[in-house]
Length: 223
Image (cartoon, rainbow, N blue to C red; front, side, top):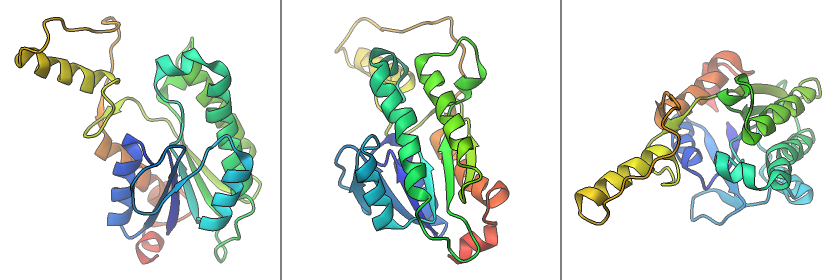
């Protein structure tokens, strides 16, 4: 199955691409920044025409939508950009996917990666943008697109940006051990978080298709 993965230059997408290809699928990656990756296309989620052209060119059978402003402090800095990317970008993808031909009797499919933070109140600006985007996704459920929504909690693993907490702590600890720094900087230590390995998370995304999506495991393995 040909699957378009947004946020393709990012940490999670690279692991997802490997998971998908290992299981007989073709992963096509896209992001707003350039990346030297196989099957990569540069496109801006906020550019309706560029996204429509990309989806028309790729003709995906499914989209896994990872692309977003996902670092909570960055999300709070520019609410306008946050809305254009996380909400408007989601709508642009769905509008484009509506025009992709059906594959036999199957509708094109869309997996929206939201966040477990939408379950908590008050919400951060990031979580609110994801909740709003979920509503957009649900509006397309009866337009010939099969939609799924995932709400993962925190995950980490190889390749994550050092601005996130786990790689930041590891980097600081190594620098202190090497004598390159003396102060260990933290954020809010009152927060309690569970972390999952990103490789388990992307395997779960694949299982969502196999168990709960429009395609069963046998169909996926034969594509």
